[in-house]
Length: 197
Image (cartoon, rainbow, N blue to C red; front, side):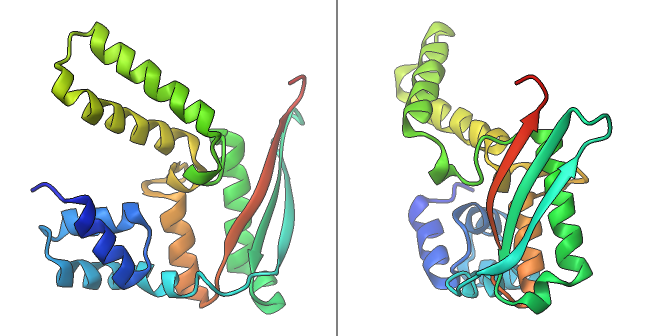
């Protein structure tokens, strides 16, 4: 069943969950909006989204140095209270994300942070590839959109499959932690350093 962009938009407005989460929920529930809301609530995503507007100014800055001392990550993750910042769950999450960044080398945290010029360049490459493969003109946009989604899934931290559990994305892991701890949590920024680069 094809899920329309409008269906995703309506579910997103209703739950506050991310677009990709809403699309997945609709796909999992056969396009039924009520069941999709329940699905998001069960996963803790809708609850987490309701906290997204709250100010997160506490947290920690974490440094991870990969064995061999040739690769390191500096990471800032924010939460609402110092109490949560001191919990083992929060700190383990931050450590796991730093290790994930070391392993996966994301370009940015979210789609919106990727340079639009880079996105446009990727679109042109994908379109040219599809034309060179003899794909029909009427499906070029779908092909480009599909390849662009794959590009985002490889380049954006929140969309990458989590290295310790590829069944979920980093974004889903974050939303689950938000739902569990009851606070807005943001991956604010990171820097990945490799010796000699």
